Image: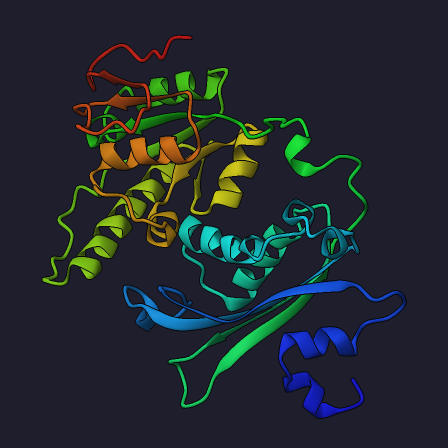
Length: 312
């Protein structure tokens, strides 16, 4: 940009200023406001703040205007649905991440060429603060994405929730041998630490304390067996399952970032919720009662003193 003023113009002006070669058609959504929970600071947890979206999507030329055919154009809903779907999928810390995800969703349509996404926070300072990104679609699709054959490459794990009776009992090694030797990649969940956790009258604070108590116990398990690796993010869990790592789930990040939050935070309920999030084949609760709401997940329950075995 030669003119500094252009840098602060609306994305539609920025798109026009950076155009080169044959002009592209543009559709846009301007000043689209939503109140959401977003932010990396602790003060931004549990509160909503206003954010504003300005999105310009450049598309390949078509005959829609001449033919007056709505089926030939990319709908404005492509942009608003990309925003809404991302906001309801997960809690995001960074505006940069949110902008990246919205851009990716907009560019899923084979007719989309380039997208400008500007997102601003309206309540953090007297003015606005925000981020703008520009992304281009790489390569040309040979068929429309909705017609492409879907290939399921995500692993569907076995989720095992171990009670403290097992974690601190003589059968722990045998259980870990069985879990590690199972044909499905495994994620282990644990109870809160045996030591009583602090109590707070604030529900959001107490939820965080309870989750951190579970994480303490996850590290206790990792200290007992070197095969167990404490993992706290979806990306790490995906990688661990693909590389046959025995993961112990530290739940704070995924639970606190989830939209919506899990209804229950008991160890068994969290294990079932995690299983539903990762489309697990089954859940085994060792030393627990089966939760009331199993979210459509197959749940098995065994005694903490039972012989360590999982089955096929």
